[in-house]
Image (cartoon, rainbow, N blue to C red; front, side, top):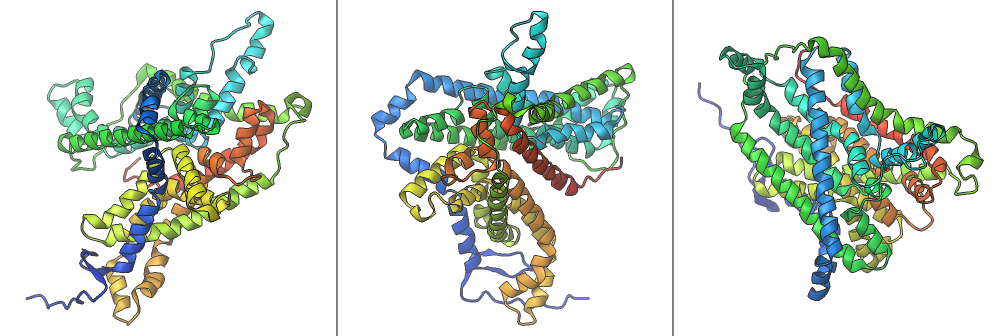
Length: 549
């Protein structure tokens, strides 16, 4: 029976040809394209402004900064830190993923949760706790002094920075690798075993190619985090670009900050390019999962309990040390922790919650047009605004903060020294978190529902509010929650852009850390850890594994 002819609405005036939506959803309006393009440009403002400021410098000044011996040293330190943290995270994350997903490890479900939980602790709080515990005058040194041990290896420098950042970023590799393991097709592995290949050969030839994309995805997140981390290297007194940019700017040498920021942006783009090349290579080499059979469980034999102890040791180091140190400082008498120093005020928590809530609200509002255009538009141009939003997420927070600081001083003076510019920084930094969740939600909405509303003479915008928005509301709430929780933890942009006299949890923690009044940071740090724990609840609440466990 021949199909009935379908009538299609012609593209009216005011539509952009080539930027149409999917065939069942009608064309995308010019206004949506313009709004999305404006948002995409806005998130690039901090990075572009740094480039503008650097372009105004004399060539001799730029050359002088680049040729300084300390510049090469800082570049080397930054690269070594990123490589060390990424390698350490792979060495921790991949074995933990394999132990919890493919072996008969005791209490594997418990260890799965424990292996992911370090994400709830900001790395700078981890660094603060590790210095308090293992520093020259820390808890361990005080405990060893009575038995004659007066000096212990220093926690400061490269070693401490790599250790702390690795402990609080390896879950990225763990989660992505575990997801890949849980989606493996066990039949390909069994086929390799039937060809007289041992377990190691089967892993190297079959399993590893399927895991590489997941490992690479987690390693990318780790590398970008290590590149952008400001708090941990500063606390560990290790000179990398994020720390030196802040120091040089406060020393009234902005030309150094501009040049170093551009170098840092270049390194970030290089990491993204390298990850893109790896991803393209894996597309042609990785196996395609064409089945649902899970690989058999690997028996650890006599290594079951040693493996469990190793997992427990990692969890204890990452999860026990910071809360224990903070509680210890919290319970000490005030005179032992500098009671005359700055007092904590609960208004700082209120300020954190307020600014982060506004950022979450603004973030989901501006993410909606980007997500909708990317999900429903056709052609490469429709995805450009969405891809532009990811630049802000990849660029370190200290660069975002510096760019907006100069932009506010030069152009946007009405919002300079207000929470508006701070909220702007949060949105630029974490907008992709909402865009990603919203885009997924929009793709799950049947376009025919919107078409049905349009046949009832309902305008496009009203149809969106009445039909699409209620269906994507879970994505709106999840995206807003992620922006809120990550904005609460943002350190460098908050320090640079907060209004005078305006303190938040993170700025207070940073202030008392610099004054070495550690006890005063205990309460706000514990509050921040508690709020950050909600981010894990959001992740676990949206986690859907197509597996049988």
